[in-house]
Image (cartoon, rainbow, N blue to C red):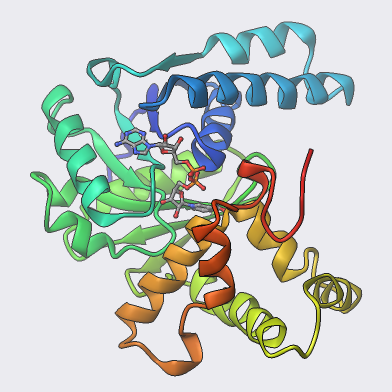
Length: 285
Ligand SMILES: NC(=O)c1ccc[n+]([C@@H]2O[C@H](COP(=O)([O-])OP(=O)(O)OC[C@H]3O[C@@H](n4cnc5c(N)ncnc54)[C@H](O)[C@@H]3O)[C@@H](O)[C@H]2O)c1
């Protein structure tokens, strides 16, 4: 199977995930176009990547010259016509129609063989493929948060996905020093399906007054989990985590045990999305 040569990666969405993925791609030597509609988010992404790379210099992981080289590889833009590459990684809001709409716009400015990858946590790749012009070019490429640190990447093969694309992305993920795992297109794929009860049961306990969120985090961390569920939801973004819970719940036929939590919905209604808004379950500076 022929492995596609990838030189330029377009990362759409410069939020929590897009920014991290852009850093990973540039560090692995790819040219990166980092696109977002919001100029303030683009600026924040640049600052975040710069800060992370500064830390790598301090730790002796990269030299000052490499720092500059990596940063120079990333072009930040809010102009969709600049989004040209051999691979597009979409990391915008977790809404099917927004993703379909963006892919169809990107198809207009790219070659027909450009790989279209979605970083979606939960939306069916088949459902996105059904709305776009080149369904066989679409694949799931699911990085974990924070992308520069987390090794696992799920590659989701849809019904129409060209198998050569999956092979190309396995090689790409390896070139980023990460671990690719090929998954089927089922609700939540592997990790987000298995992780649902971790968040939901913790919120049910709080809702029913059986524990406080800080206590739940402390107990689960003492039991060996790296992050308690509430700290983890704040890191992920409550809006994103709630969308993922809702999509997995709906796609599985709305089982009662996976019903999204009102505790989380109330936070979102108050604009408390977690670290990115400086307030979620916890407060941040
Ligand atoms: N947060 C996580 O832990 C996590 C982990 C893995 C995957 N994901 C997935 O990654 C995707 C992005 O999540 P996130 O947490 O980075 O979200 P985020 O809210 O931090 O960032 C989303 C960004 O997309 C931008 N955007 C929205 N519509 C756009 C459009 N049409 N064109 C360009 N930019 C647009 C917004 O301005 C925002 O900056 C989602 O699909 C999510 O499910 C999230």
